[in-house]
Length: 167
Image 1 (tube, rainbow, N blue to C red):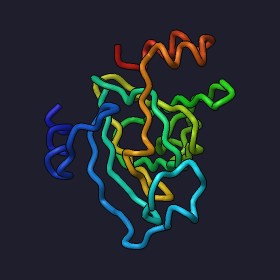
Image 2 (cartoon, rainbow, N blue to C red; image 1 turned 180 degrees about the horizontal axis):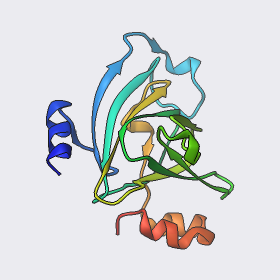
Image 3 (cartoon, rainbow, N blue to C red; image 1 turned 30 degrees about the vertical axis):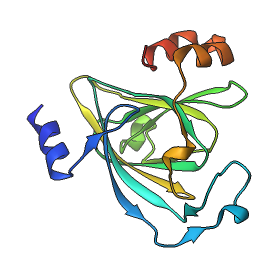
Image 4 (tube, rainbow, N blue to C red; image 1 turned 45 degrees about the horizontal axis):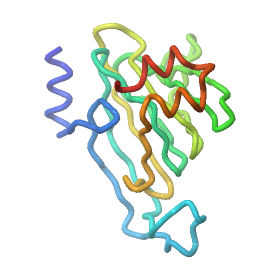
């Protein structure tokens, strides 16, 4: 796994609260005032933000949601398996990668307010991704629930929620 260590070092990544590693690479100078945003936002937001995001086979990105739409971009490694649960409980799974013949997509946007988690699709590998968020990301918009909260909301997805949440 020296390759993973090299990527973390070369891209100057740090641990992310949801799992994996990240580094913000862009935050627009311009911002949208709070009174021009919906009531979901408490404060101004930059126009857009972008990060590098790395996940390995040894960890996962736990279920969470943000207020904004988040576009995922595939860069390197194995395809990332993205799990999405809509506010109504509808489940979607897809692979973000570069093998179009295996129904992988190189980019995908998760709608704001949807719960999502991800994992690497292959053992002993990694997924290097990019994420673009608009309006720009703020940890004020980030919600990572307790496992029990998601199980109460979506009991039909019990196995998946247990697998992709932290204790």
